[in-house]
Length: 430
Image (cartoon, rainbow, N blue to C red; front, side):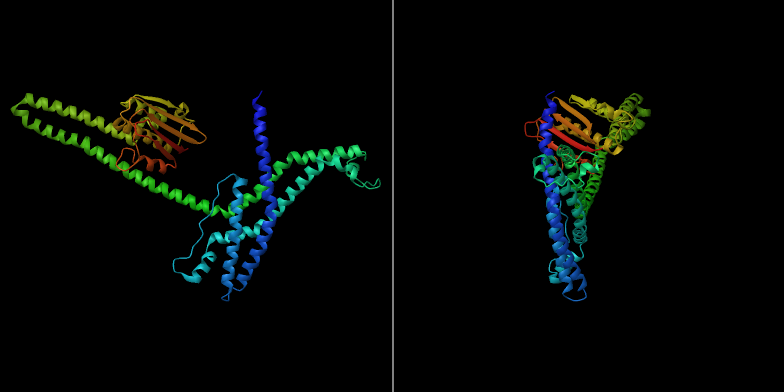
């Protein structure tokens, strides 16, 4: 019973604040759009017309710089309306030592500069439409809800056709006040929605023209970083696999070959010794197979593909020498809740590497593994009560994790002060 009023109290000021922000954005947008349109169209048109002469190109470049100034002003106004961070694209710059003409041609050859010019042209009619709706709704709301206070001051001619008569109502003072008050309440209740729509019409147009290139450049940079991270993670995984095979199964296979050769020599002269050698070779064979199975589980564990992430992580926790308390969303193992194979493999690799590093270096007596899926994100937390001091520097057990997580589009954070505890947090997009 007490929650709803508290929510309305906190929502109403936020709605009023956004209404004032949107109204200011729209009302200021029309004069800015008009000034920007006139200055930009005059300078750019003049420069384009005189482009055949030497003087035309600097004027054209100056017009594009004028459009850029108004575009930068609009970018400063967008975050409050769109509730998004400030974004400014990278403009083309003149090369070092290019001289005057290099600086002149830099904006002319820049795509974003022409998008700024297009914004200056398009925003005037859009700003005019948004301004008209905002002004009409504000005027209707304020005039309607206060009509009762100033109706008496209006000159009234009985022979004139009034709005109540057009609606079939008796043309009396009371009916007139009631009608205009109802209209005012209608304008007032729909004011936030209409003003918000008018502001978003201008803001989304501005964002598309003024920050679209920046967002595209950011996306390209992100994808390039993910590609490099994927290559680095793959190279790191291959080096680790090669090292593990060299240090484990390869050495055992060399020992196995030597045991079989010695058994072959002992077979005729000392059958009992040959039998003991073969028994030892058989034990090495079993150990080699176990190590190969362990390595194959690290590459592509069958349980992950067959039964999903919860079962695979339970198997990892069960093999850990440090007791691990596991909390995994059970829906991740159901057919409807299964994630993409890339996300599942990345999550499995992160947990496997984190637990391996924990077992080798943490000196912990207990660990906690939590995996939660919400809002299109997969969150992984590995916490232990060990000695701390873990980091992502080269040559350490966690070195390949950052690249693997970045390749999947996620983020990785490690909090491990000296003395512990250590917490590894991973956030992956699903």
